[in-house]
Amino acid sequence: MSDQIFDRPARLRSWPVLAALALLVGVTLVFLIEFVISTETEIAARRATPEPLAADAYADQLAALLADADSANGARLVEQHHCTACHRQGAANGIAPAFVGLSERAVSRRPPLSAAAYVYESIVHPLAFVVEGFNPAMPQNYPEVLSDQELGDIIAYLLTSDAH
Image 1: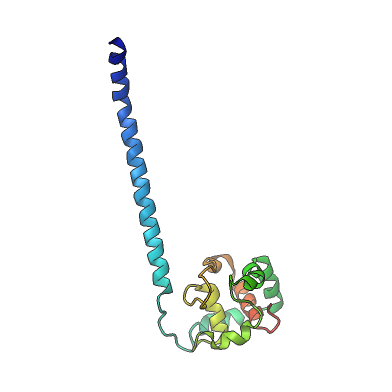
Image 2: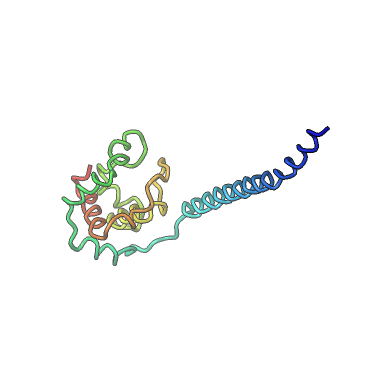
């Protein structure tokens, strides 16, 4: 009988800890569910049919980016930023479109965009248009990772027939 007297207060003292733990687990679950739903909604919104673009879309940005662009440096940058992992080695496995022939395909990929505008949009706003047959796997942080000079150099390289 004396053992029961000592057990009750110990059990009564542990219930706030258990309640707090249950509350923490509940809040965490709600947060995770909301996070997943909001992420899926955002991705779906970005993949929605894009608004029609004008032929001169991105013209101002491209003029500045390509003014002093160095395609040879762009070739080095696609290696440095591991773009070739998906667009060269991964292209054989259907991970991403290949760089080979991009300058020719880009002309008609997303009318009325020019080839340069299409390549620019593909890097800066990769979810604006996803090539059929590919998943939207392009990193979305290149505007933060690349300087304007680097972005211009990469675009200039990708528009050459040497891009591979």
